[in-house]
Image (cartoon, rainbow, N blue to C red; front, top):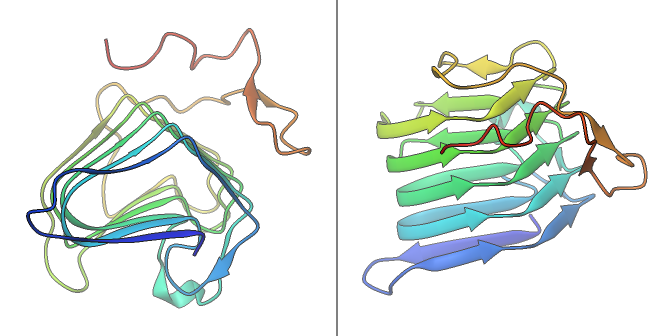
Length: 171
């Protein structure tokens, strides 16, 4: 993938922030992968147009397989799969736009072991292939609305002035 972080233990917090990840092909997490360790933050990234080469592997463009990870304020759009959390502990995903991913939006995957203390809320999960949510259900404050991204064809992914995502995040 474009950014792959193996966290380790006891090294402090690792931040992946303010990146544009576009047009990557990989079997696992073609945009941003955070795995094998603790204390990570994935924030304010634009992840779009990435393809999971092995769709049967079902790893999202943003892929978390770790402990104590926050995924916040990202736009994850127009990939093969959006956000996948696999066998992780204490993951918090909120205020993300997860839209237009062809195989699905938000997935909690347990094929290697269970997830525990995974929370997600205040995300806009909309128009993601066959399923917006895979092995999970919408959270109480999630939106299911067109985020009204414009200039997406050119890769800019700005919110239109009328977007329902404006001021809809976690207070």
